[in-house]
Length: 137
Image (tube, rainbow, N blue to C red; front, side, top):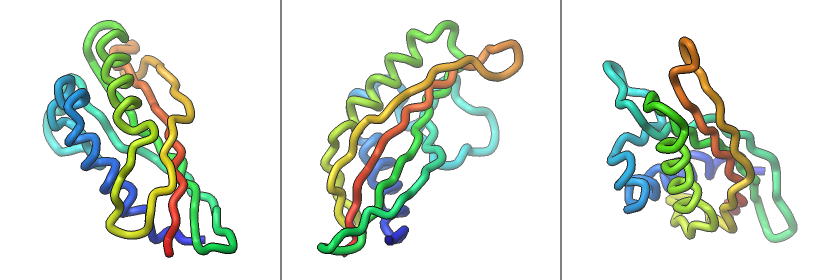
């Protein structure tokens, strides 16, 4: 197994979301892998946790990454957050990302959960889970 592709995968996901016209139309450049200090925008995308498992085979080192991309919004209702979550899902599902290290074999949507968080449930959060198979040859 190799975890060596993890940073390259995260960077490619981040750049892909920034470059996607559908995502940009809804959230601009408010896409983070670490929250900035100061006031946050009303709606933003946050790259979140990941789990990685060995997926090596006879052809070489590999891993399966399961990672979360969250849509977080203080806008009233879930409609806007769900529209943005759909754009994120469309942008990443089966995307052909070029990695700085290794090779992406495939990237697929796995599942999502939507919930209210924050004081009084004022924040809407949709966690999108993706599965990526990578090789590190």
